[in-house]
Length: 422
Ligand code: AMP
Ligand code: GLY
Image 1 (cartoon, rainbow, N blue to C red):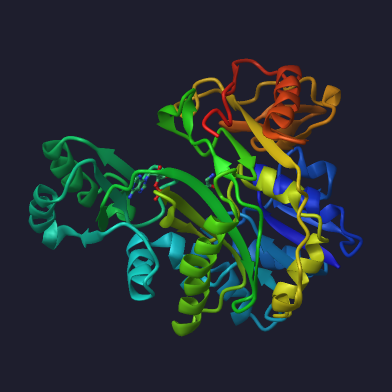
Image 2: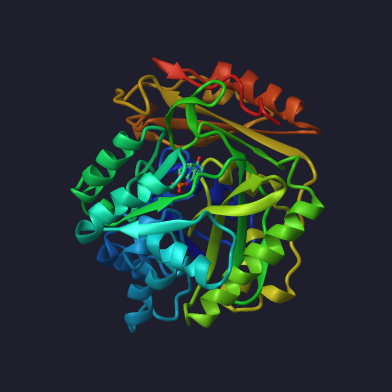
């Protein structure tokens, strides 16, 4: 079977790496891909959001399955586009339809969904232009810190956590006034939850599901979880506090009600659900849903899956996931993200990357790279995720860090303390 992956980051390189190991995959295509995915399949120079170009590529290359990496094409309705096209409707798309993608595409939708199906999450209210003054009065009544969330997709930047009431009131006005464009025309104000975060993933065909390994992501740029938020600076899987008892609570209080809720709302959901959770005194709460795998979580989760990945995806497409058992590698996987100096602020691109051929006992997943003549050069803020296995976290990190040293480019930066809190 020929398979197309949409996307271009470290997650998509990890998906390509996993799929390329399956005897069920004949030709692998990635659109647009990066210098890493180019070593595993054919990169197609088309945007994941250009559905007409995707259609043309699918028909030309006899593609029989499409796996969507990032959220944007899902929120824009790529799955619906396939279902509505007579020539594409029988080609399975792994990733929810537009209605399901609202779990990530609209925070207000996600909160109302959780409230309706009694899924534990922070208390909230949603405000928009006509209710701004009501929102500001509401802020006076709730306890700080104040959590303000743009309703729509805002490239991971749409959440503000503020200690000062006047500042929170002003920012609520700024957001509704267009601080994040249309994405913040509605703003969710929610209760602050105090705890340790983790990411839990399921793959579902809408009814059956398999729980993938959980992971912890390190989002801040600075050591000790300080400084600006990034897309993710490293990850660890498994997460020690996510023991059997905790994961049982996650499954019964969060995973099952979410899948049942999607069914109750007649939403066709075939794909990944990423539960961004927080552990509050031993009880899991949902901070956010995403409708895709995490990045860099994918770079530690996918290596731990022993089951043939294409078999899993086929089971999703054919709605027989409830009969499938997934086999997980017991070892610990870690990843350390090498980023461009200046990221998540402004940074330069086009820096030549050296040392990739010297990597051993780790996998260098390309996040923001491209080929320039015969060189691999940087093309993004997050550049390479160095993933390793170990019998424990320390052992895995030792390998990731040894290889992080070998790979080089001008102004390379990375966090030296991944896993520090575990
Ligand atoms: P989100 O985009 O919803 O994941 O929010 C980004 C980050 O803000 C999360 O990863 C948390 O670290 C933090 N955050 C969001 N909501 C809350 C909350 N209700 N309480 C505490 N921290 C939060
Ligand atoms: N690492 C967090 C995310 O993928 O959203």
